[in-house]
Length: 273
Image: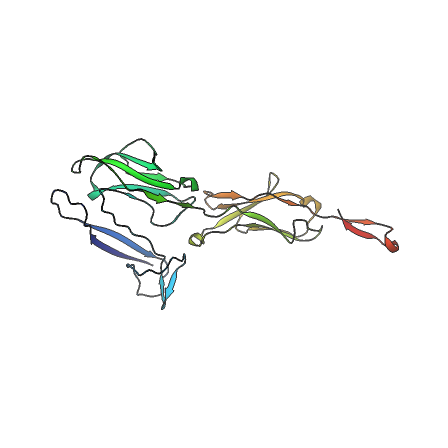
């Protein structure tokens, strides 16, 4: 179900040539399953900072978003929601009243990200943590603007880790007895904001794939044999393969059984090698 609410407000900012301030329109969309007819988007009280849906008195609230109104000649619009590895990042250099711009330049941490040009948008198809930084843009206003260069305030962009590198664990032990069952688990964790993201897990022994991408983070070995000994590692990846990470290697040593005749009392001795 989708409910739209329009909010119009007067921007009281810099007024040029005795012109009246203008109104802007923002569209907020409330999406997802709604169990009551009384739903909508509205400015709300501070509901806290938990990264979960909020429930009170039978109502379910979405996670809050931050809406910032600026009164500068030039504004850099950044992402309204947290951004994670693999996301598409778009930054927009917006002029007062949409006036035309020339020589638009984007910067990260004070360094230009390209030559000046007419494009008001800067985008990164798949962001990495290294793309974090303080961004701003500069441009020259053309008529009817002030006709001089303007620079925005900086916007902090923090790219969060989607999930940590997995850890491969063996249960009950990385040194199982021959013939016993062993389970390899590729363990990692998604943040609450992206809990619906599906990860695919692959398992490798040496340089060979033991199991291709699958939704299960576990690899079952019903009966360990000497041939199962070796160096294993796993990989976790998003379905679009935009983000993938490998685990450190885990050595599996299957403990075989041997017999020696002539032990105490003449019976067989059992041990492991």
